[in-house]
Image (cartoon, rainbow, N blue to C red; front, side):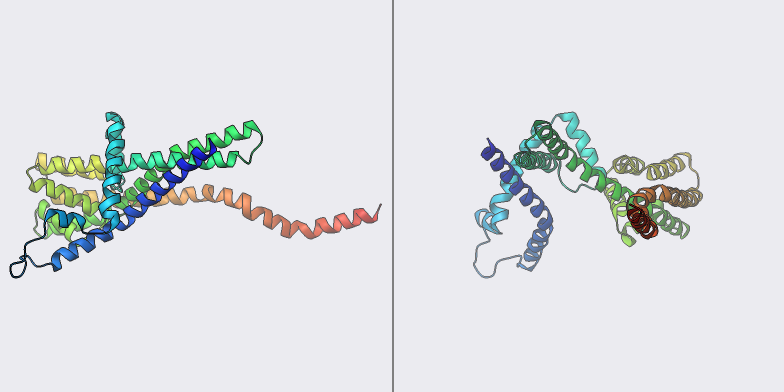
Length: 312
């Protein structure tokens, strides 16, 4: 039984490392293939025939030719086995995190993490003799395997939301300047995507692309706000939508929103500063105060011990 668990843990760990390594180097392979395609002539010189589909399929490294289709089949299978409601919620969570991977890949990551954590906890249980401690060890491995991918995804979402909140005042200020210079709202949004980079300009660029494909701009902005899931952005989009529906001056609306998001940023910084003493309380109590007490009271305790020892 132990050999089976070790084999499953080793296989899951190998697949996990290959998946993460493939996600890290996939962009580099894409850039390399695009550069090779740009350097390749459009028409083959002389009477040379263009490369066939079989030759194109054999190009690339062994990972692109063997491992990528295998992992794709596994991810598709894991996505089909996921319930529809859970799959939709996972798609929304991944979209709010910036789409670090596909839904099928994340489901496979969950399974591999669970197998690896349970396998490691089973290995540790071999060194533990007491049955209650073994149960605790297996429970911790199971909980860790279930929680680690979700914790990682939640961290990605928090970091992206923080980047969007920090970039929102600058984006609104650039919109105000562009609209006051005579540009329309669509041209001002295009100017933001041209001059700035980050998650928020990328989402605006996606909304503009949806608008160019026929979707109404207000609906594209609403879908963007729902997809991102940041309250400040949702309020900003709602104010712009209401201004366009009611015919209010977009310049005044943007200027009011600029002041509002700046005030919200200052308030958020003040809240973080107010939470700082409470956050520092645990490190002070655990790490700093004992060292200070040892330095201050150590010599006195040593002398007191020596005096009491001499009285015996």
